[in-house]
Length: 526
Image (tube, rainbow, N blue to C red):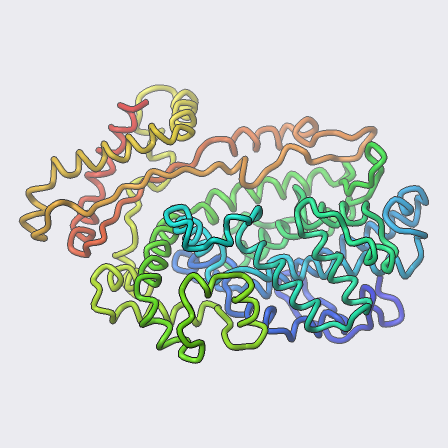
């Protein structure tokens, strides 16, 4: 609602030019939040982690994404506000009196939810987060605070950062503090909204439900922005979506007495394109086989940082004294350090640690740090790069093979047995050559069989479209039904690596031979 120089609930302050959405207006409240260290650090957090090593253009930041999601959330909320004013029952299920002030507050909470939803991301985004999760599974005592975390790690940090922004950068009982409280309530899973904030803003619980749909529904502002933005910067052609058509089709209705954001059936073609784009982006970009290699490498680097932490902290963070590795990752400690600008804990700082690992005298630490820093041949080897490598070279009809692979990959015991069989074959076939060329025994090789499900990761079956009645989209569109079927097929990778540099390069020369062996062992297991 851009009225008399107002954007959301505050006066217009500035404009940003974005390659995806064009001009993005920013109001005074948003501008002040952008100046906090929590938002500034996002300039140095890449949206796609180390994916730029595969797609060189993919160096865009979490900051850009956050601005884009804020803009889309504002557009979504403005469209719904217009629809709400046409139906008093719907409007009163979301606001107290359907006043202009309350509608502006609804838009503002939506915008700041978009701006702050990813503020807690670690360096290299999801890739480092997965590495921390693996370390926690091995050593739960290392991060005792994780035991109570019921969300993703970055979402847990996000809540701490939002709370600190609210407490440190807003005045008590100010409108912005109440709005940030509402944002915190929207993002926090299953949290009962703060009653005082609701009353001050004139919003009802239905408003929080609708905003939650807009930021984390099936077709939401977060996914819409990252599909378009990641496609643009990576240079792939899959993520083209008709945003204007989607927003035009967006409306709000009462479903079982509760307000819900839904899409009119006239936007079906744009919705189909969005589903199609997301599946292709997951298959060829987000689940690229090299990304799994990066997960493995970062997990190894994090372990080395833990082991060499006394040296690292003395050089990178000497002003922090003897702060421990585990202590640094504690959300309360990290929030305090970022708020006081003592550290940013962004990718610049993390890579400084990686470069230090190359000169510690530890051959394993140096080997893994180098794999990220400058020696790509030391990254885990992609023996099986795509499921087609398995399906096309096995006997039997492809649909039957895919079904058997799906069953296999859902059984952790069978997968572990398969990994052991691959390693056993490798040792029996190449052990003597390995001892001769590298002088090591026993082998330090590891084989990792992994799989991903796009259907679980990218699609949900609860998307509703408003027509004569409320439909499931998969029941309306044969195109989407086909996407669901295709997205349910497992994406399977097999990676190989060794902590010993000589053996790793030895395995890399055997890549094609190992691939043929792996396919045969898969076929035998099935």
